[in-house]
Figure 1: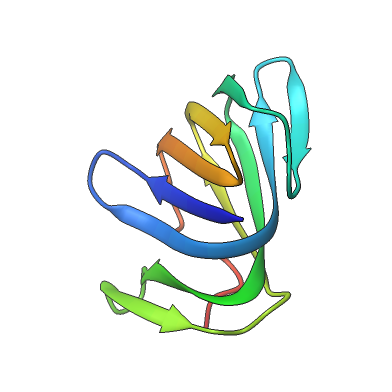
Figure 2: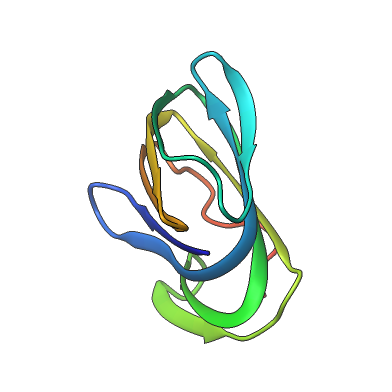
Length: 107
């Protein structure tokens, strides 16, 4: 699966993942490979991404630069104030606001 995480200011994450957990408006849920198509609003809460081995890019809050990695199985978490998720054919778009601390678990 591939995911793109966007804020109004910048791309936070793009790449290959095994799963993502999001704070849906009707409760938290997880998206795995071959998930049914869905569009859902998101509430304030934590987003957790588990990376896959296909490589990914992320915005590093400390350096202010885009970095790349191939590390599989890394769990990255960040807090959002709200947003939307769309899942279609193993492509996930996460449009979020209020990413405060950047991605935790990056280094």
